[in-house]
Length: 293
Image (cartoon, rainbow, N blue to C red; front, side, top):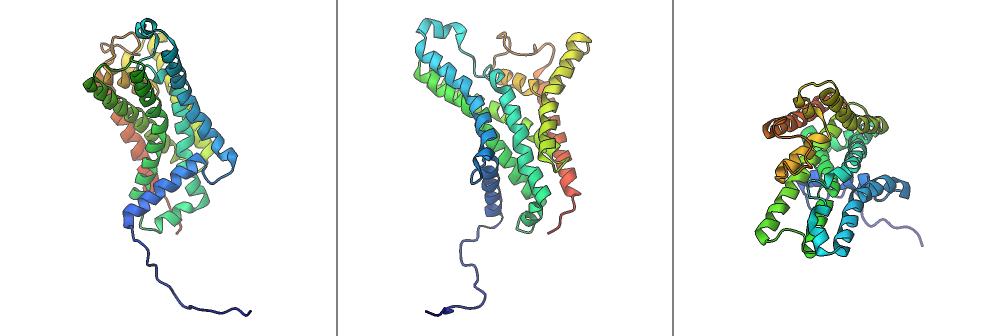
């Protein structure tokens, strides 16, 4: 049978037109799939899956302990608080941020895909907004998920909040705490990733910068007797201490710095300054970036 041509010429697109919102939504979905390695070989999924699993393992272990221990032991302070839990998984959180942001930003510049995105309805601010939303959403997998899982499980085991009002208050504090840590690490990671188009270089820089800041500030404060306000430069410690203040656990013996040394106002100011500086550098780099479309 010979081939036949039934239609010729240009065919207009007659599907739904989602506009700029649709473009941002598609960017977020595509970037999220890329980070999680969906649609790619198994080796691309190994790092994100392992990092996410490390963030949940302590929560699962504590839930199992809560289910096995007698009530008097469970209520004796053996289980961690919701703010104290981040001390067990802080390394997994910033390592995930170190992997996440470079995968989201650096690869687009190196492969030239950034020009393709900007040829769509996306502008540079909208592109960065979509990438930032992707980073925050992905990071909440490890900042929000484990404490939320603990809240539900502890409530079922009768070691959670005692009333509906208290339960709702703890839930709001958990969500706010996850955003405090997630937004800070996301902005820092995006700012570092804007400095290079090599994802491995950016990941290594982030993985060294965050714990390195803690080591340097601790040495200056505790060994060299500098002002305790230098704690504000402790990148992993700053959001953790803010989370203790959010959960009203200051003075519990678990918080990092006494309010007499570092007031809550200074913590909030340092948190906002770090985010503003990181995002300002990110915009500076992309505003001046030459993109071929």
